[in-house]
Image (cartoon, rainbow, N blue to C red; front, side, top):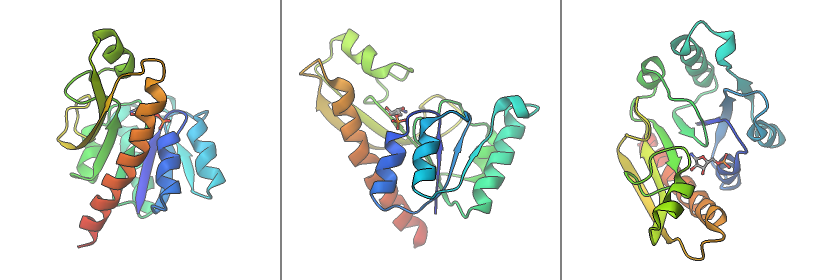
Length: 180
Ligand code: GRF
């Protein structure tokens, strides 16, 4: 079973659901994340784990990990989740947390990766699906998808289209290897 962590609009969550992957729980740090509405519309249990309600990030992450495990989660996908995860969470799902990032890592690791690629005037950009560790997009790369940055008017749409293909593909493969 898959657990998905979200903070925003949730188009990657939607891609996982639409691909028929077994999403059993969706958690967020923000109660107002639109992604939570998508999960509820698909009948997937949701919960919000706000930092304001916990003593510190470690405690919040432990409670969130327990909730995911209670929903049978074996693999965690960060789909636009905007907080770094702490060691107590990472230790509960070793090598079983993946993230999708809108650049060809290690290029443009920051928050506004698409804008940074445009400003750097590179010809090619892309998407990276990688394992998650304690750093900001520093875990092992699992798969990358490239695309030309031309035409420069619509990079977001085209990058998200690559994400919506690549992420479900990698997750499906990882789930198959979990089952062995
Ligand atoms: C995606 O571009 C993803 O690469 C990045 O955050 C964005 C999330 O978009 N980590 P969405 O919430 O899935 O629509």
